[in-house]
Length: 215
Image (cartoon, rainbow, N blue to C red):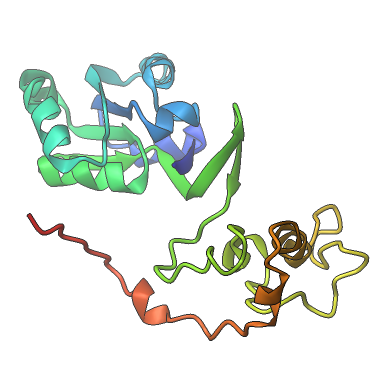
């Protein structure tokens, strides 16, 4: 899921300085789980903006704000409220913000900072496990991504700074290559450690990414 957090309220107010009437948009998926842009956060933002003298023309929490067709449909369902607004304040990831800005010519303000693609360890605790590199190594590294989990992104074993199995950059963290080694040994696949992983194919990270499924 996409991990995000709300921008400081002072930054949001500064972005809305010349705006009087605001329509709020949230996301029922990732932003809700992150407690950044769900029903509760949209209501809290409405209260805060009203207290700051803004007029809230309406709000909607879209099932998936990054779904461009759905975002357009949900905004059309509240057309009168949308048309009354001087700007949208979108409590969703960057993809969601761009879905909203594409669906309408109204000024769009991002209320969240998009941080990373993350795993949920437990409620309210998120960890980055994947860098979306487009050249996945997880089969070779026992399902652990050294590109992301290793601060140096090392592909073929630990660095010289590893000390007693601990990471040089974060002594509280176990070296990811120690984790990979232990898991491969437990799986009876220790011989994979002798296979040299070639340099990453960074051409797969060219932006913007696109994928069109064949029918």
